[in-house]
Image 1 (cartoon, rainbow, N blue to C red):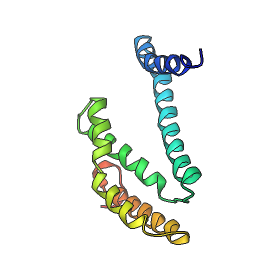
Image 2: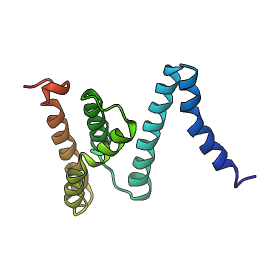
Image 3: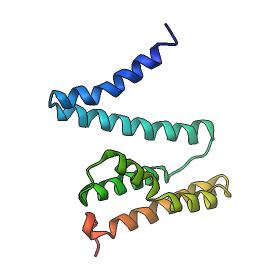
Image 4: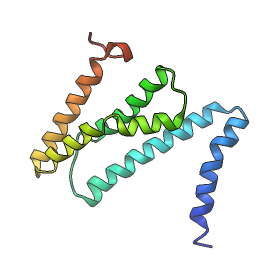
Length: 137
């Protein structure tokens, strides 16, 4: 029974969006998708902080970068969730690789400060895109 429990939970999680869409319950579908996104962000933060022991102030920048690319694709007319998922992953992949190479060479308070600096750079990059909701021109 213990071996079957994860498969049952996975099957229910995969069937939930289809059932809610068939019942036209978009609120519950949106709410569940937000829960899964936040759970994924919390799990990745648990990996870096709990198991790695590294305090990162820039963690939300990487989660937000994927969400921002996905929302740009959606506003440009790409309605496929699979393309949005792939675009969110690949949109900032070079930036993530560069940030990782620089950040992992530091330790302690320097790691905290470099991740904060990368998060601020991401904030100003996103804030400067007026076409997609940024404040600055």
